[in-house]
Amino acid sequence: MSFIENIKAQAKASKKTIVLPETSDIRTLEAAHIVLQEGFADIVLVGEEASIAAKIAESKKPLDISKARIISQNDGALLEEFVALLVKLRGHKGMDEAKARELLVNDALYFGVALVKSGRADGMVAGAINATPDVLRAALQIIGTAPDSKLVSSFFAMVVPDCAYGFNGTFLFSDCGLCQNPDSSELAQIALASAKSFRALTKQEPLVAMLSHSTYGSAKHADVDKVVEATKIARQAAPALALDGELQLDAAIVPSVGESKAKGSSVAGRANVLIFPDLDAGNIGYKLVQRLAKAEAYGPITQGMASPVNDLSRGCSAQDIVGVVAITALQATQE
Image (tube, rainbow, N blue to C red; front, side, top):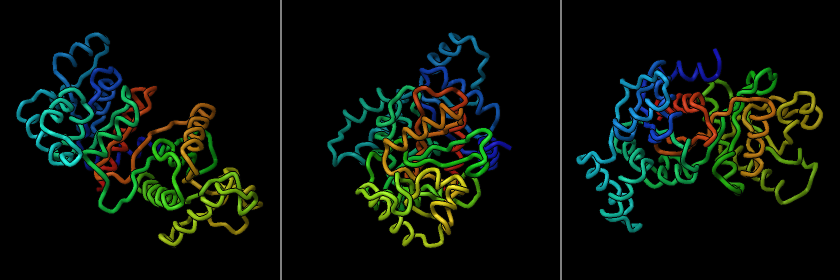
């Protein structure tokens, strides 16, 4: 069973409801059709029934979304409930009823996360037509962080074909989509959250590499010092976790190089969770692997949020959306 098929099977065992707010994009409706056909999640679509039907008719594809629940942003009772919710949550930031009503009617992202916050759905997936900051801003303002989390970060689940490294070619890359330049403490938190996410998704032991341009002091620089300090902090917080650094990428995943550069390491040459020192490195790294190795890249998936809200690349396919819905549904079972 492939990585994503295994995720779907786990999600199907405890079916959750996921909101797809971007119904003006045909990829969203194609993904809803697939998810409902495969039956691993229930779907809520934000929009007007007539507009959604017209979009499907334009595409001339035989899409069946009859099992989805379609909710209008102009639903009077819901709208007033959500206006009160936003004022309660954001009143201290200047949110009043007029601003809340305008936001909910005109921005499907806020309406979607309100559905999650109110318990009418378990998670949301968006980003096919909205930028990452817009998706995450709505989620953070309304849903917020989990009680045990100090930081919301993100990861990509990377599935590399014909790859002997990682867990049968499966890796978790973090952070590639959210935290711009984490300090040592934040980098340690990202590592710990990513290890937890890897275990939840794969049921395998996370082997966490704190990546750098240096291995065990081979280079001297403040950027290296940050990773060394993050490694110490993470080890103190989770001494039983297999985590090591600082490691260059080849030392982290190639057994022969790991043995040569980091002899005796519990992680070197075997890492399946790769923690990048900043967003530049992470974003460039995942895109290189996705494009050159033709890897499946699912994400950016958030971690540390009170309820799962996950982002998409604006270049995503319908199948990419399906995969992220499956991951989101599985995350929702583990809250």
